Length: 127
Length: 127
DNA sequence: GTAGGTGCAAATAATTTGCGGCTTT
DNA sequence: AAAGCCGCAAATTATTTGCACCTAC
Image 1 (tube, protein in one colour):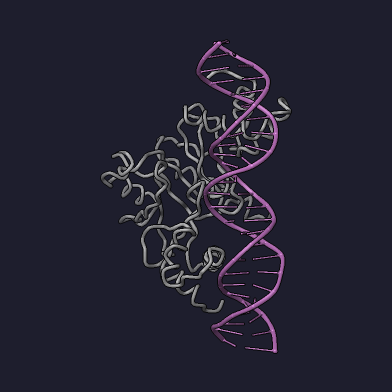
Image 2 (cartoon, chains in turn yellow, blue, orange, green):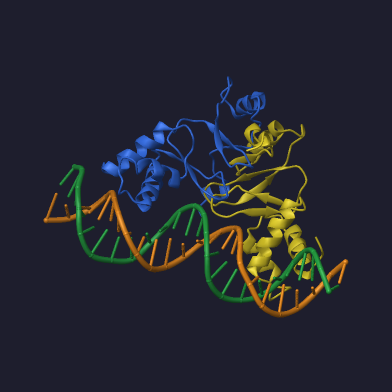
């Protein structure tokens, strides 16, 4: 994958925020520095970079897909009302159970989704 | 909400399967008994019934929304490769932690998503 | 009788793709 | 120069909506 102005800006922009922007939101950010960038390019690059593991793709909303510039191991939760996606720290134990504890202890945010990145056997086995 | 042939068939069909069908899949099922049912009617009814709590709407895939005829308290997980959504029992402890234990103990299926049905404070507080 | 429901077709919304031209390497 | 990108516009996919007709209560 070679380096282009568009790709670099998209990645920088994605990494500069802690929200988990949609392709559209990244497009609006990147347009400020590369005014004639196209939405298709943003989609293509986000897709490409998530395939390569440079960024993370979040399929946590039914409507829009979101992206995360942080590829370190952590979980997310999403509010079913507003659709926002928040980071969830792993907690002291560094396990999912720990993350659930952190989630419960948060004042205000009660949490919605926890994401575990594994694949079911049916898929690993081929089809 | 009054009872119509279409609505009744949609609900029966949804309840008759343990997969978590998309609107499209429900449409294909219901068409067998009500050949001239329209996809719009299926969408409208699934949406309506999930608002009323008669069925559950699952926003677990980025692409398609899925529906569950089982409204009892339970969680789901989704394979990130094939997109299928499976039920996850709550386990002996009847808690999320219990469900995670069940998930881990399953041979083959290792799990992907856990869903907690709560809302974040920002939403409860108004906006 | 009428409020609510239905089918159809058109409209949105999110994402993907074909293609001719431009840029890295 | 060649492979890889890009912008644009058209195509797809999932879902929603407007409207005229229909039907359960």
